[in-house]
Length: 295
Image (cartoon, rainbow, N blue to C red):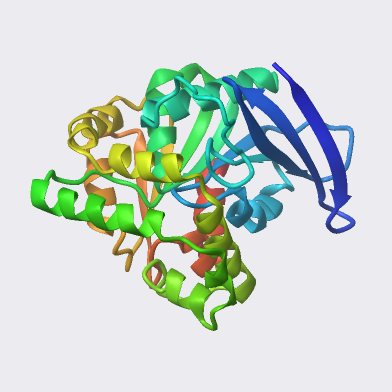
């Protein structure tokens, strides 16, 4: 497995960023370390992003936690800088496959046991990973995730709309005034930095078509409705599930229902935030995460 750790960039005197590419199951995966300089190795925390995004939106949280953790961020297959090869792969876009990607990534970087912080679709991947490879996890944080009921009409409508959204993406969107703000308005209750909004729109536009569309079908599906409650019930590692009170993408009620299935899951709801509580109210999010990690 090829592992190419490249550029080292000191973001501040206390925080160091290293980027690299590693081949995981036939796909070059982008990853980066955010940590504080020094010879002492710290526990590793892995960050998993959600649909249409990239590792970029986790950076500020990783920097804040780098006092106690060496933080590993990576882009999921087909998203961000983890570009798919031109030749046809046998891999599918099932969430279990992305959990297998994560296992291969950890093995390739020779990481035995880690902490995990994940979001949205990435939190579904992390929940599956928790039940497939519990021996690889110390503790897990699932942000904006939960269980939902199957509604064929609603799902079919969502898939149809999602297909149009994925198909009609153009670079000139980035030049349209207020486009980033309009794009993110459905996901937010509180404002976030303008540059973060632009980054989200960039990542969405650059996401691979097959990956973006394929994960829409696997994330919101009858199969997911059937298996995810079982998977939440099976989680054996200490887990924190964080919801945003105003989230309309994955409503807080879905998170509460998931947490009720398992005594290993601690539930926290952050007031006046939506689908990105870690960016909308970073201080409260970090407080809740640190309380959970300090156990």
